[in-house]
Image 1 (cartoon, rainbow, N blue to C red):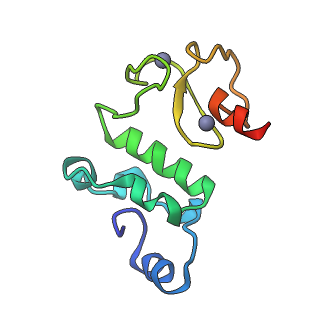
Image 2: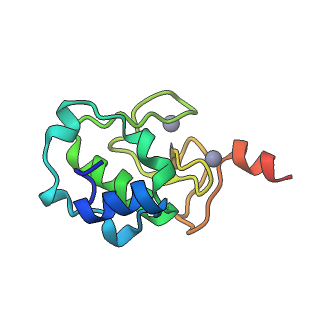
Length: 118
Ligand SMILES: [Zn+2]
Ligand SMILES: [Zn+2]
């Protein structure tokens, strides 16, 4: 987990169940490319991140990875190169045209999550 933040934060996470905050996430330039090459299980750190921090992690990974592994759940094609929107609940990226959304709203939920709210 240390690639993501600094040692002090990681220690706090382990000892005090501290939740990683957005400001704790390193800038992409400071993160080693090892995270992409070694296929670190990024999803495994999700429970340790605040929602904002997880979003920062996602954008960090996007910047790091040329071939992003983000797949649109609707069409099963990669998210890359087409406008996408992040579900605020499951934190999965969707193509905006696949979910028939034209505007980037701050709080957007995919159909699946939206159905769960009812
Ligand atoms: Zn799609
Ligand atoms: Zn969702």
